[in-house]
Amino acid sequence: MERRRTVYMDHAATTPVRPEVVEAMLPYFSERFGNPSSLYALAREAEEAVEEARGRVAAAIGANPEEVFFTSGGTEADNWAIKGTAAANQRKGDHIVTSAIEHHAVLHPCRALEKQGYRVTYLPVDEFGRVEPGSVEEAITDKTVLVSVMTANNEIGTVQPVRAIAKVAHDHKIPFHTDAVQAIGAFPADVDDMGADLLAISAHKFGGPKGTGALYIRRGTRIGTFMDGGAQERGRRAGTENVPGIVGLGRAIELVTADIPGKAARIAAMRDRLIRGILEAIPDTRLNGHPTERLPNNVNVAFRYVEGESILLLLDALGVAASTGSACTSASLEPSHVLTSCGLPPEHAHGSLRLTLGPGNTDADVDYVLEILPGVIGRLRAMSPLRGAT
Ligand SMILES: *Cc1c(COP(=O)(O)O)cnc(C)c1O
Image 1 (cartoon, protein in one colour):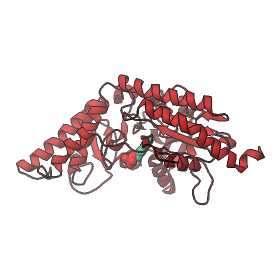
Image 2 (tube, rainbow, N blue to C red; image 1 turned 180 degrees about the vertical axis):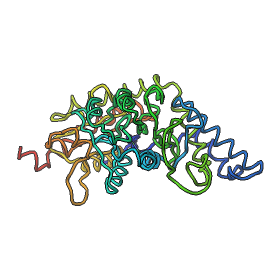
Image 3 (tube, rainbow, N blue to C red; image 1 turned 90 degrees about the vertical axis):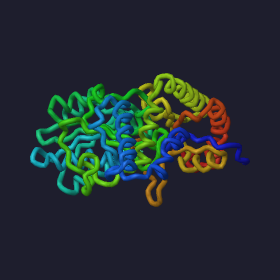
Image 4 (cartoon, rainbow, N blue to C red; image 1 turned 90 degrees about the horizontal axis):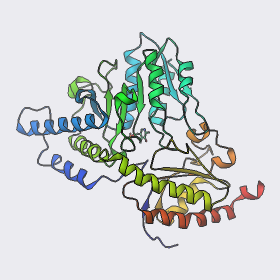
């Protein structure tokens, strides 16, 4: 079939860098190339730009600038939060509480700690992907040094009751980390309101550049250094600052956090039209994630009798970029840990489709997807060996 246009609906994977962000970054590659640590005007210019960006990130999450530390992205921020907290609390304990549906940037550092002898509790979630705050209470022991639960899930969009979870942690004097990578720009994020002592963000998920992020560290939180070297970031994160990236992060977070309710409402209206349209037009389909407590831009549906990667291939041929949580990777036919943890029925588990919207999407994009998707699923089902068997 002819490729009619490109409809990008994979904003949970990454987003285009906004033109205003590119514009803000450009001078810091060329005429303002100074190293912020050096002692001359060119360096001061770079240093001031980094501090201005720090102020913008702090303002966006209700933090003090000195509590914001730039990193190479969300993955580094999560690694630092988890491994750094574990290292700084070795005398206190060796137990971490997290959820079964965290991003690999949280799960894999936890696995790495387990190999070193730490114990990790991976809290179960309900069918909608929510962590029950009571389960956090039950999991905590006198050796627990960190509770880490993501603000919103990247696959199914479920928003966690982080405030209630943080309260449980704080009642036991345990710090609370949240991976807020998907939440920035989706709803107002305030570290005090959320009860976050550590919070990870990533620029490329909201119109900023890849390879730049930040870790919020509440004043007084015990955490080790993650990158050892020079005295950058007040001695806590070594390495010459990614000045253009940091400037881009600052500009992007400023843009994305302006008028969140207005923008979220527009995107949620497209989300709801997609969900309704898909469920109405295509039988044997279910919505993954929470019906209401979900990111305004997230659609995740499972189609019975089809395989997620086949859906993506046909959609790609029709100019639609989307994602699946049912990767039929090389040897295994296992669907994602997120879908499995939600107890997705096996007959649905392999055919999931994630569409994540962004500010560039239009009603025409939604119309187009609703127009082609029934045919795509119909064609795949007609060829499906699973279909006759059930
Ligand atoms: C993308 C993502 C990350 C990783 O961020 P990077 O900047 O790509 O390293 C971590 N957590 C969540 C929830 C994400 O969506």
